[in-house]
Length: 293
Image (cartoon, rainbow, N blue to C red; front, side):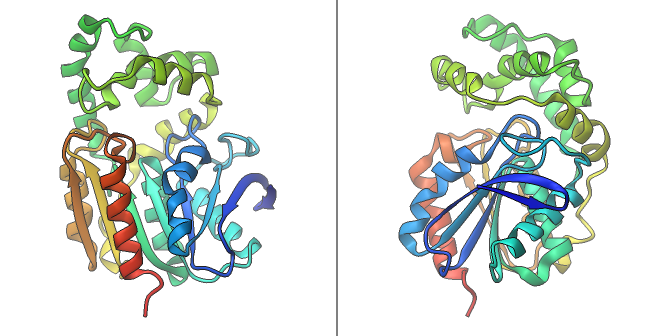
């Protein structure tokens, strides 16, 4: 379905009984990701009596391309969506850039939040420099492995990180070229599955550029997180290159009520690399902490 919130049409799907405790799912990858991966990853939560709300942020997937593309706007859209659907207090699950949106939601709309799950994210933008260093060290190995992906260009990689992509086609090609970095190892990288996934995505370089050139460089929730007093599960893959485990530990240390789980043999997406272990831990956390007593 489509819902009009804050002047933008957002594509949304729900699973489960609306009378059950609701979980808002925030996807990552502004300008390339959408609701589908989160919907499929967390679908089994319906069996535990949860109502899932999976949607595309403005400018992403099937939602309307309607600036501004800021964390504040994304979080306010989530709150407007909660109200439009007539939901009570909610849990939020945010992966990668969706983790930033989840933290923004917790800060701006915490009175409506009962629990939070974060995956592969950070409390501040400092992880960008370390991600660049890790990528620079791995790119020669990616080239040498001949993984049937577009060749990696350092210039194109820098354009992506700096929010200076030239077109949707440039975005598609550049992102495809760096997908091996997201796997826990080059041996674990599935080139065929990646090609199919890339072909099925909708790319919007304008959203990505706005976020990565204007919003992402100044993100900092380190002063706000100590005031977010809700149970939080902080998860990360041990081999995550974009948001290494040290940044997950920082979040867990800042939050008053958080637990950290590091998944071995997993990269940026432990839900894909270690699906049973990851989903099992999320289910265990939500059963114990949401809804709150």
